[in-house]
Image (tube, rainbow, N blue to C red; front, top):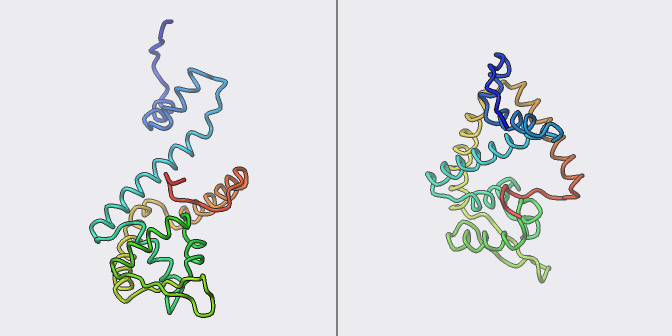
Length: 190
């Protein structure tokens, strides 16, 4: 099979400078019947998730906290004073399984970031409370993380961010409906 090395028009050459567009173009060339419309969205979403996750882990490592602990402390902090929830409420508000919550609680309790106690009048319910040390760690960390993420998005205008937020909400809702998925997990976690 002979390969053609024809000169590309300027517009097509510009598209091929983007590796994701180049992947789609190569599939269109090699398999014209293959639907490639998803590549531009899905591949970029995966790449962004990886970049955002890697950068967040780096920022958190510099702050001395792991992502799972930040997530746990954030759920408690967002609940409002007295920053206490049942383990079930934490599981419902987190993007992970009850087993993962148990592991997170064990680490955070060991590090004196949370305390656990039985809920009054409820034999099996366990209350988890943010300690002053956990509160201080979260207060020092959350602005660092969210400021960095805002910096990563500052290439978009406010209107573009709002539009992207709305489109991603629609896409996520539709994909969850099609997959019959009720909750979202972190990238790479079952």
